[in-house]
Length: 88
Image (tube, rainbow, N blue to C red; front, side, top):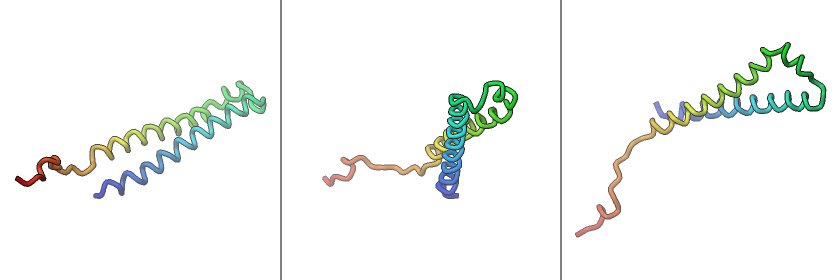
């Protein structure tokens, strides 16, 4: 299986999850700062807040895993040093 067939979709999903997690956290913080949302509401709705953090951490974990796979599954080629091509 070509490695890019796995790396490209996984990388796109990782970026999407991280972006969603960061933007969602930014919205919650903005609403807390402006007063539209109170800490008591965040505490009562802890499952929603925790889910936003799960998306962020899941995206980071998928990105790290994808990068690791891309590095370990890259094709290995034996390269001759530049002096190996010199004719005597």
